[in-house]
Figure 1 (cartoon, rainbow, N blue to C red):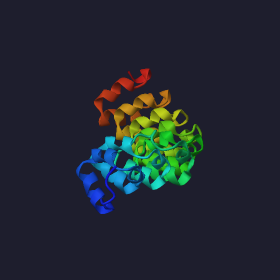
Figure 2 (figure 1 turned 30 degrees about the vertical axis):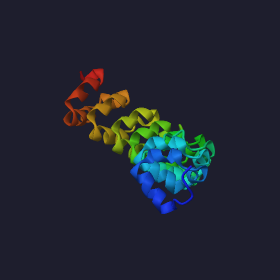
Figure 3 (figure 1 turned 180 degrees about the horizontal axis):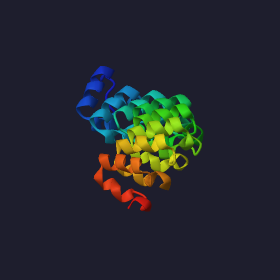
Figure 4 (figure 1 turned 60 degrees about the vertical axis):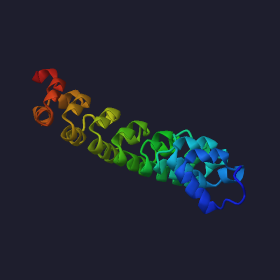
Length: 204
């Protein structure tokens, strides 16, 4: 390992110069979240040299998410059952929502944060929340195709109109009654000509 004479400040600078150097440090330094973060920020692959104990360190894992430096499999399972961790993780990286425990995927506050950040995450929400109008509206405002994940609201005029205004081709996920609705189809086609192919047979 690195000689004892190296102080922490110097090692932080060293890691920022070349993250691969983490593998040559003593075990004690490989447990230091700041040293490891400095290394990983320079070279993401350095994470494999870190002490596995850091996988359960909440601030460290959240800092990794901010740097896009680890996968959703990196944190220990227990962290995905920690509401505070999940809330923060979802605000940093919406995809964290899919790794959360089922209880949190049915949590309206967490789901709302996820879909506002990226509507595609609606597909990972509980069945109940995918029928919750407020959450579905937030999702389709951000990502029109999220309508595909909300079968119970595909007949809802406001939800479908919100999706279609964002992307005309999301008309394909609307209930047949709305795909045969002249106003809705015109709105979709105005937004995207290609949407015409999704109009109901009665209008074709």
